[in-house]
Length: 593
Image 1 (cartoon, helix red, strand yellow):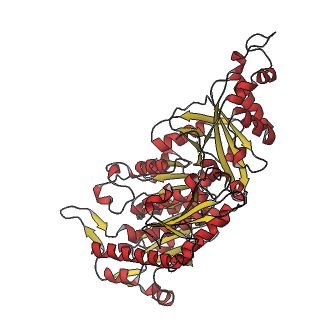
Image 2: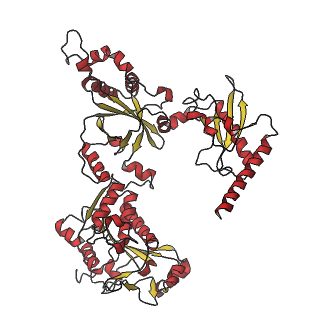
Image 3: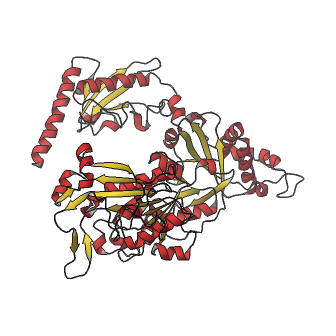
């Protein structure tokens, strides 16, 4: 089978190349080239064609080749003698590669000849000259094409708007770390590494806010270039850099900040202080006592001959991570208390952290065992650890900009230790599905001042799941359960018992896998975020119902209470209902707490 599959792909490629050859050989401007005679960038191509592009100043040799993945992958174009075009023509990259079709663009593989001709035609237009707007609009990209600072990256922990001027810039092995404060940076580093961090600020960080976009020819190469740029765009930054050159021999970092439509683009410049106050001696002044402006004037040649290094900038701040990799909603100031970190709660915690909840506290008094790992988000590395602590550590390493706390206790013990446990959060979410745990929690909400509360749980075999939002208006959790805590509005009924027992043990459990619970975890997380952004006034029940096939596979049937709705609206969907008070609820009727 593998041989026939490879033969099929090869035949597809050979046919496409034959079509291109037949289309081009009738036009004398295209010449087939042996792969051994092509430009270096095209040596790996299976077929290459060349044409001479006549331009005003000189003729250019343009080659277009196709790889073995053609026609499903786009042709590759390259130009000879490219050095004078690099960083002057934004579409000519290092080595002479002509950027015609971006990697993200779709191509029509049914017209291989048209595809090759298109690349030739567009490459010729590029070589004739293109606008410099790309340089300005894609500043970060072009800045990164000519770095001089080796492999050291600049990590920005806080949004650029939160950085003062100056700001802490700490030079570490492989990284230059930037944050609004040293304390903030140490917390981030401790979260990321899992070990205490004791970084100290001994270096200068300064931002230069550009009044207008830069072209590559304006990128600074020396300290004089850097100071000229700073004086033109940000005199405060220029003063800070001058002071550093005079007073220090330590490291310095300048961030170039260019405003663009979608936010800011950033570039980094690394330099060193020159300690000029000690090295430059002026007549009539003792060492270190001469005015800074005179010292700088006297050291002008030294400053002009001292090179600076360009470095790439990597944003790891909350705003960037959760707008670039999220839906853009700002949850950085929101906080959630999650009670229960089992299979369902673990995935909810994971989703809430990925959504960007700024502060997440997880409580759970259970240890992770081997029996858990098949459907828990934690794995073997956390065996015999408290789920809450292991979950918090894992999430902090993955998202070190968040504040995540794991409390290895039942919520009642945690509350006894910290009476502000509830009120210092915006929302409480319980996924324990334990009546003995959740009944007093529900009663507290109804009888004390607490944030909104959500209860989330699965039905047997995860054929359905629910998320109840309890608000001041409407019913509470106890309005929908019997005296044993069993939900009376369940979606499914079963022909046989749903609880399994471990052989030779007294442990009982529900059978379901991670793929079945994930829609419910996603629903709970989505409702949590919705509730955080718009506090509810009325209680609601959100219910997920799985597929008809899933219910049939575990001998389950839709209950009488749900049958009409499911027949009308179908399976594999979420339902939302208003949740009213029950006349029989002891909590809402104030007969007991």
